[in-house]
Length: 117
Length: 115
Figure 1 (cartoon, chains in turn purple, orange):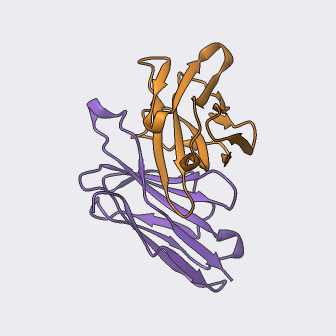
Figure 2: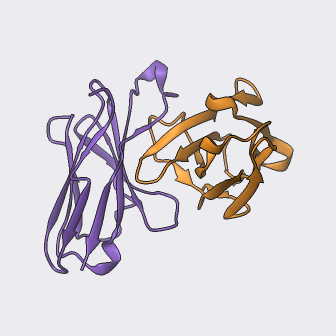
Figure 3: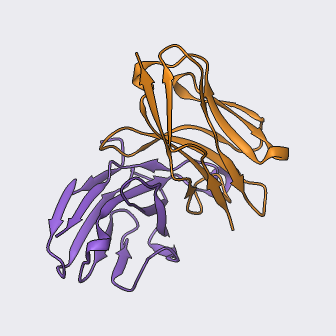
């Protein structure tokens, strides 16, 4: 497809379980972002990749959160030992970012709604 | 550090009436500003962005926004509301045009259109 694809769309897990969320960015997009959106709130930045390099992970709330993009395309956000406060929608965005086109906007996927019981 | 404040968590207008959604920002450097729309169970769709080329920015679906540096504002307007405009609207700021750093979002404004 032409857009950012995220899977699964919905994930229910028991507290303490590990989860993995997948993001397929738009083909050719260099930059990839993860955001966390709590119910009734705006998205909050988690982490940013440029190709396979994780350039900013300042928004990750704890060391239970880990993101990777090993080949510079698909990315996975992993949450270990999930807790109830991890329940949120996790949004992925990608951007065609190059030196002369760094004003390209971010394109968002539909998100993964994570519910921790 | 950057921040965004959206005044009014809910705004209700009649179909055909003017839509005005308020956004004020705080940024230590000249900002890039964005408005996104989110429909239920969907991701965010870009409406428009300000990148210093022009203070009045026209976006999709008849929306526009004006950058006012003196007021640190970037309010979103539409002359005539349509039922399909009912959604959540987010204002966001970044240090770059969006491709090289994370966006800082406001808490959102839920737009309700009354028939």
